[in-house]
Image (cartoon, rainbow, N blue to C red; front, top):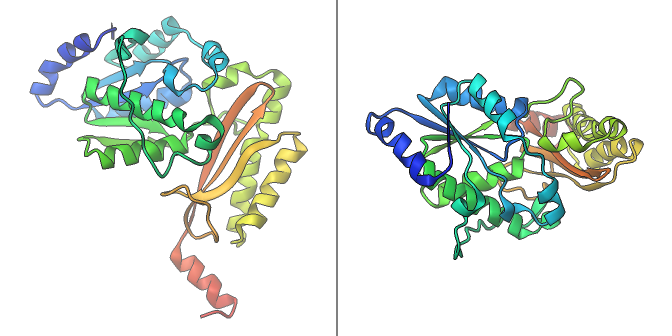
Length: 296
């Protein structure tokens, strides 16, 4: 595996493989790899001839300078892990390579960035995400890019970005990887104390409670959210949000049918965590429920 630092190096390294029509997969990351990152790399390795992993802690998506400073970093460790799963190139540019002096362009995706994380972290968070992802796609020009479902809103934003700007690549959203107790893997988990780690599992329990309620036939979002919230209350966790939204538009749902995301964000100690689960309620099941209830 080679580590590349500049856009010129990336383009030179990929020029001949691209001319030979070898497929290129990109896994964008901010580093401090865990099994979730590695699962994306393995998926890319299975599907693509060449795998590029970007490692860049993007300053423009942080609304808190303290959070940016505290974000865990260990490039040497990351390089070893990436090499072990068969990554071809680790692209780890310095900030000035991505945002050179005089940089003044921003990419903004409307309609799916104002709520949820956009409300709590500010619209500029997703402007930062959209801008850096656009730059990475232009730098690497991958055929496929891989992202995790844990960052569900980010996944929707990136899919919309690629669609709206006619970018010539495929986006693959891969399942959330969890610890044995159900906590979604995140680089931020490293900041949790043992007690906070135990309390953090309540996010997954809340999502599972929501899923169980829907599987049992509950279709009222308020009732499902109430049951799910009780799990957070038991753990003394106050959510920034706990909502049921459309998987496509992220708008709050009035009734549970089709593809619905249960999304949650909460601060446990000083660490802010997010999680989600996708619930699919088929039209057939909804129709059967309506008939059972005596409605046409």
